Every structure is written in C-alpha cells, then in structure tokens.
Length: 70
Image 1 (tube, rainbow, N blue to C red):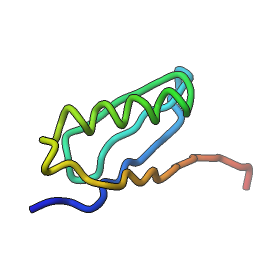
Image 2: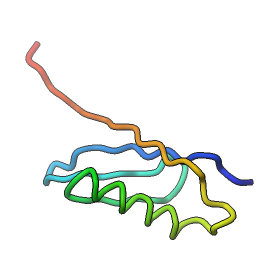
Image 3: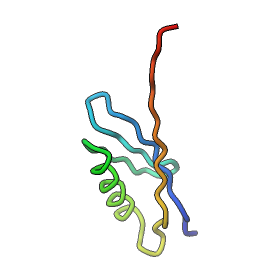
C-alpha cells in the first residue's frame, strides 16, 4: 500500500544542528541546518522506499523542548 505522506519529528540536537526521526518507519537523519536537514530527509526517504511506494508528501513536525522556572 502506498503511503500518501510520511511524518518526521524534528528536534534541535543538544550538540547543535537538528535530528529527524520518521514516525512508523526506521528512518533517522541529522544535519547542521534546517535546509540541509530537508535535503537529508528527502534523500533518506528516497533510499528507504521504492519509487512506486515513495510517499508524495513529507511532513515535518517541529518539536522544541523549553524549560522555564516555576
């Protein structure tokens, strides 16, 4: 069955840059900038799926953890 979209959870890396993990698939990548991360995600999706099974949309869910004093 062809997926119409794939969702990635994107977080800032503690070491700098960004990390992305696909929800429901074993796909993980990282990069120094958001533009580079988008390129890396497209490449990872192309490597993971055959052309006929590749999702038509990649959705990025940006997650930001922030701690504030109580």
